[in-house]
Picture 1 (cartoon, chains in turn cyan, brown):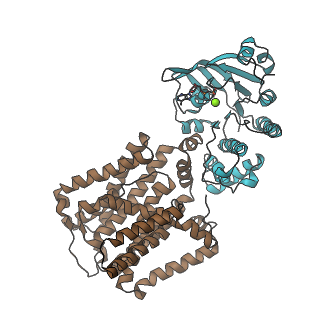
Picture 2 (spheres, rainbow over the protein chains, first blue to last red):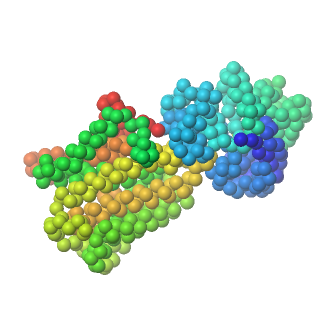
Picture 3 (cartoon, helix red, strand yellow):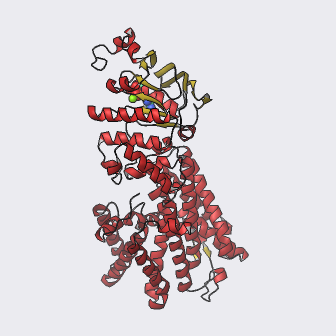
Length: 243
Length: 332
Ligand SMILES: Nc1ncnc2c1ncn2[C@@H]1O[C@H](COP(=O)(O)OP(=O)(O)O)[C@@H](O)[C@H]1O
Ligand SMILES: [Mg+2]
């Protein structure tokens, strides 16, 4: 397993006249960890949905290692090597935690037994092993977020899209997740793009940050650069998070 | 061997022994039971079988069909028509029957799933197809039109043409029911089966982890329709007559859904337990209404009994029963 490069080339998307994303371009090099930040409603999740194939961009293209993936179905994009989590978590509620992740693992392992072993290993690393026989619907929100990560990872992606997986975690839990992701990235070279409001996590993980506001990219750079960027400060004026 | 291991898998020995004993009993049942009880057992097996077939689409893949009479009706009519007109026996005819029903399933499925009809909207589509077909068969001379199609009643056993008495039909439906049970177990323990469950729980999340949702749903409806067609073939030769008004009736479709709903959607034992409960209740209330000499009371009691079960055991009788017996059908 290794990482893939992601290129967004001027992608845009409107919903019934509402311009949710407009002309956004950036690159995440193979093996890098980048963050996508911006106020609520800025269009971050919409960008993820375009990368993951929930809908095709109205304009522009998404490329993974140079191959155009925009316009493909979500399952094809998963085949291409993109794993994603959902901001509004989508567990398979009536299945056990283990089986949730097993479904993801079946993407790489044809046999149920192998898939289950692979799923169990991922659950251990995310600290969900003790809960593996519980129904997913019985999990607390932080655990559901972890389950999202586990299920996406089980598909063995080359690019992992994480949509606010730290939201609702306590600071110590954030640190555990950060540590997990950093170790994962270093060990496997997996490329990670994360949408995150928890700046503590962004600062700890991201080599670069892309800032969007009202559907447009307003800044990009290292955490150090971005936190001193005037447009960014304007957007976040009065907000605690950048402090 | 590998297949056997996968089928038996981690099923507790206690269940395997019980199932073996049950199967042995069922195999010798015709020697033990009188005519009446054999006919009751035949009904149970029939509903267990079609329930299992319907459960693949609804219980596993989460797609509600209220038009499964379409596939049973098509299967029955095709096989009976081929025999009636050309003397082609049902063992050959069933291939045509299954092919036609599976095609019908594929058409319904494609229209429904391609255009993302979900829940009741998909159900309406399945009803519409069943109704159209009923009207078409009313006017189709080859199939006897609204006057129906009749096979010559002949109790001399002729296995090649599936002619004979209840014992023959008993063994055929037993084989179907056992076969469907094993098939469903194998499907559930496969990648496809897990993909169905994932789709049932959340199609968008399933697709995000690489599940080809449309293809999996199509496979579900085609398998379900094909199995249901076999029930239709069996039915046509057992009862020796077919009418569009009954073969494609809404009531026939509903009847198919009841055993798995009452027994437990998405479980392997649900359709079987549901068939036992439903047929038992049906027979009991028939006896009661005969004894009381009030016609129609059967339907009222039957309806009330179903209501009580659905209200108090919304997940079905089997999950509750399994719990009482200290068993647990491993919820995947
Ligand atoms: N499927 C959709 N249909 C209609 N509008 C949408 C849809 N998804 C997002 N939007 C709109 O697009 C804008 C951006 O939303 P989103 O990408 O979720 O923002 P963020 O993730 O940055 O909070 C919002 O105004 C939102 O209401
Ligand atoms: Mg969002």
